Amino acid sequence: MLKAFLNAVKIPDLRKKLVFTLMMIFAYRLGSWIPVPGVDVAAIRGAQAGGAGGFLGILNVFAGGALAQLAVFALGVMPYITASIIMQLLGVVIPKLEQLQKEGEQGRRKITQYTRYLTMGLAVLQSTALISLASTGALFGGTESVLVNDSPWLILFMVLTLTAGTAVIMWLAELITNRGVGNGMSLLIYVSILSQFPSQLRIVRTDNLTGLWSGWGLVAVVLAVGVIVTFAVVFMEQGQRRIPVQYARRTVGRRSYGGQSTYIPLKVNQSGVIPIIFAASLMALPQLLGQITSWQWLDDAVARWFDTTQGIGWVYIATFAVLTLFFTYFYAAIAFNPIEVADNMKKYGGFIPGIRPGRQTAEYLDKVLSRLTLPGSLYLVAVAVMPFVAFAVFDISQFPLGGASLLIMVGVALETMKQIEGQLMQHNYEGFLA
Figure 1: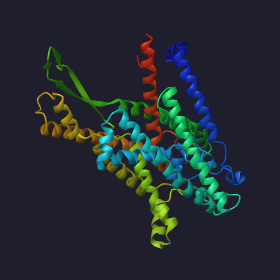
Figure 2: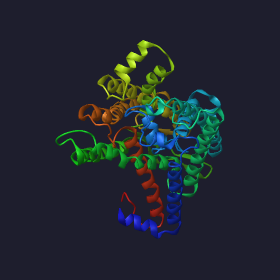
Figure 3: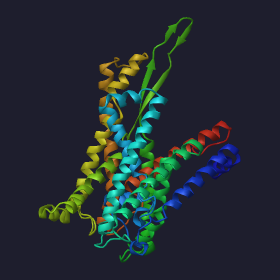
């Protein structure tokens, strides 16, 4: 791998892209440390936003710790992620968006433009909710405001600042995608998660435990488990079922087309990290409803089953696992349309050996997808609940490697390495995965 890095530095074009990417990442991390005007920095110093399993905690990790400091980039990439997921779901139910998805590059540009508009709208809503929680002290689990004052003009200015920060993040991500290495938004998420790793290890080391499960001994155990889980995640993320496809030979004029063999790659984890994000969002709803409403029965249920500040119970873990399982099947059915794939194959003269084109091909693909989603969903559930099991069994407050964070880091690292490797191969250099 060291040889591959040295080879990458030798290529002038690739070297410029790597330097430019690092500069954009530095600018992103700088914005994660600059506080929003009007925030009482002394009041929030040392505070942590959200509980270990709370949705605000996930937002803080994806924002690279900026949420816990109410920095300019406190919203991080979550508005863009949410907007992208919404646009993908709407593409299934709105015919116009579905048509745009089939129009190639021009359609993708139009959808990207719609995603930007939706991102800014969600940024306004999320920044307003964030400042409201900060003004009441609920963001940091306290009862006092962490703002300098509650002036409406100051709150409006803070909302605009956070929204502008989201726009800058989108701009930086697009610059990385167009002029740097890798997918810009994915790399920013990767850097955000990686930046929280040292602080999470420090919390693990300082947990008040005794015996082997304390201090550096606990850190060593967590790192060892993390390495094993990382190998397992890489193995599962690379796993796929290849369905062979044969194209019939056609003669048009004096030219012959088709006749070649290819395959349809169906990944074991067809849904990615989205089911975990959906499940975490729903698990946060009872707490949010408890804060908004005054229903005593809801407050009691939240305090008993869904309060993560005093530890995570097995009911919470089981509910999270069931939701992750459900959303894995739900999103896999949306991400891969067997009927559409079968129609496209039939249109271009393709067929699966032993399967009739058309309806039987769609039924076969649907059956394979259902069977493949089962191990994929169980794998996602295992990765998703692993941090919560660690919280419950070992009585620790942080588990750095697990859940959505680990899936994103592994996926982004693999894709970025493949892109660099492709450019190395063009210059006859040996790549990372050779």
